[in-house]
Image 1 (tube, rainbow, N blue to C red):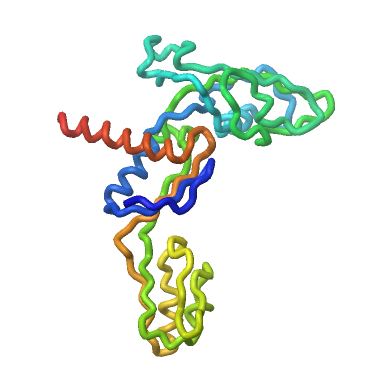
Image 2 (cartoon, helix red, strand yellow):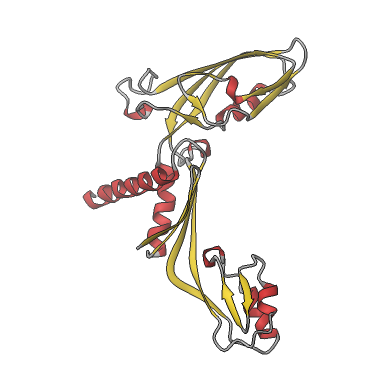
Length: 251
């Protein structure tokens, strides 16, 4: 059973009953989901204080979104030479003074975050370049990663026979415990990372009624970099895992 904890445009958090081995396999498979990123930059003019290599590096980290379908270069009919089916060209030409931002990249790909700073230009300084973006996978380079995917065990916090000394409430670094009369109440248990600070605080008082153990469920976190919806990242990660399993099955 899957329970949605938080869902918005850039983040998805849910709990589900699954083995850690499966959760980790899906997490790793997120690096095999293709996304668009700048791979090559040809700089014609750069009067800024930054080296060409630094400019190219910053441009490579700008998340890009493309509405139409594209091919991976290795799967394209052009045999990796680069064509309209597997390559997108973006241009930047601007003059100072001011901060050059990612929104000044113009082409058929959409810049997800337009206010990302690239460099600073002073009066009469210019920058002119042509960037080539391709589809790639996070297994090749981190710039192709669709987002952050991670998980942890959902905690089961037991407070039986608690003497309500309030020490465990004070010890919790995330503020997940509160005292309700003579009973310790847990709120937002999915935020618990099982640090055992509350358990140790109880033990110091000679009380061992507090226990924090894995519940058997997994809390999954998906944070998108903006190219894809977090739900889509999870679905595509599962598809990538299934595809790899089929290859292993045929071996």
